[in-house]
Amino acid sequence: MLAGAYARAALLLALGFFALAAVASGQEWLRAHATFYGGPDASGTMGGACGYGNLYAQGYGTRTAALSTALFNDGASCGQCYKLVCDRKTDRTWCKPGVSVTVTATNFCPPNWSIPSDRGGWCNPPRPHFDMAQPAWEKIGIYRGGIIPVIYRRVSCAKKGGLRFAVNGHDYFNLVLVTNVAGPGSVRAMDVKGSRSPDWMHMARNWGANWHSLTYLNGQGLSFRVTATDGQTIVCANVVPPNWSFGQSFASNLQFKL
Image: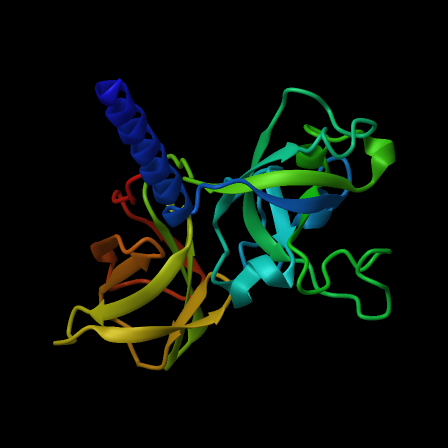
């Protein structure tokens, strides 16, 4: 009897540990709602507040979503991946059973203060909300429903190839878009180093997934030190050659772990 009691206590302790670990890693299921936009081919989702531009060309396709203020975090969530399931316990009419979809955060769903948050102002704070590309939404919801309750959680982003950098801006203003980020999907910090520069220089988030530095780096090879939101850091040494020009993109062969 005593051994059995110890075994049960050990089991409960282990279950409690794993539950705490799940919460700590951000993998617990949370509740939200989801709508859709962009048309059946998702052409209306191009561009967006993360700055990815053409989502087809960047590899994000139609599995994307605009996040409400509560989730967008002023652009710090750009690139994060979320797994969503329609909550049939709450709405059996408009939820498709037994399916899920994983989307990447590529846009911002702004609040609409002229409409109540429970009657059209779906993205008003403090509501967590996903305004999904229509093809992604229709994987889990029935079109006529328009809005569905969902449960969601953060998941790792699987990507092919390494980090990619698009260098824009002008002299003394280097604006670098970081794409194809695996693992956590989002970037917490970034630094740049010119081939003639002795030290790393901090870059600031300009908007979405765009980072800027206010240094003249023309004619230098560029290296980037990228820190993901889970703390992983990658140094992409000399990923940009000295003869680069504004408007060009460059690919690294390095990538974050899942």
